[in-house]
Image (cartoon, rainbow, N blue to C red; front, side, top):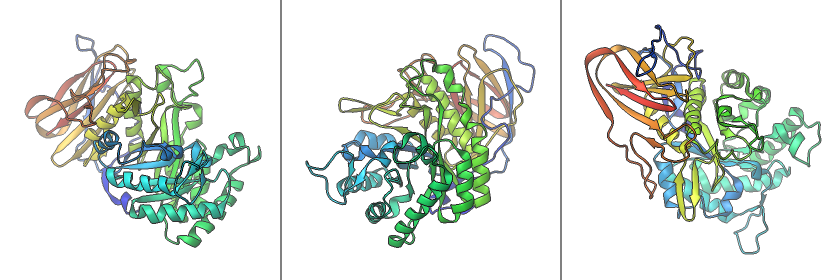
Length: 473
């Protein structure tokens, strides 16, 4: 595959048809004090495929640029992001199709729903402070190619190498439904025509600016068509993903976090096939648990952390280049929440810490598993003399004991747990026996450690509604 400069920072990954499914027991499970014993085979010599260093990401509405949220003065937020290592900051969302470019500095007289040079200047400074490049969405909803080109020129000139790519419009596959400036029959053909007009206007000013698309809500067939028709013009294919919803549906509950909506059937396969065919990598540029802002009592509970950790691994083993969790100052699904002047980490944020611990700098692969009645997932990553195994127990009350069979001798293992008082807990979440400090810093606590003295087999208990990152050396 061809990659933009940022996307050339890889670890290796290996995909299995079992990716993202519940892991399994290869021996008969037997009940006991620690629950069933399930066997997982860990092939530490498994080969793989490239996955970017900047896998994790955050997504924000363009309207947030007019606030003091994404600014260098928000030191707690900056520290929280730095804790995650490399990543991508995406600016877009519904508001990107409503914000009008002024081409001037922000003043007290600046109209609502405007984006100014001041906002872009602040974004550039924030991007530099966190070390994350920006995926920036231009307004296609209002359809004004030359105005978009003006904005693109300023954004590119200010962000410089901190611009990952520009893209046109947010969820255009839904324009027929929610954009009053489009007809009820608006489809891919109309979108392609508009995209090409924007492409011409932007490239007239910026011949080499990197582009991405189509940033769809859920229509993977649009990604397939876009990749075939326009893939030569972009460095990244992208789409969105929401596990369930909408939040306004009274039937949505915690179980919904583990029940994807039908629109996403074969979603990753279709997008990855398009990616391979066009020789362009793909990313989930906006995602979260329950669409419509998230649902209190679901999206802000520990269950969302278990979902998020499993989701990140599912994208990784399906060749995805990364994910961007959507959020803001509040909203039930935001990885961060604001209380007064304090930025607080939510359960989903702890899942991001766990993913980093289990994947960074290692070769990602999926352990050999078989069907099981128990709701859990297992993933692994090897590198630099160690193997990290991530286990996610999605059972509400059933503890599980995992027996790992390695292919290399091991001297010891350490366990960092992702846990909370219960599946529906909104507070008390910890990773690696630690919580985020008030200043945004995170220091892992003391880990469980056990000598193995050259053994290739060991077991650990993973309590119900919890996850564990087990590092074997």
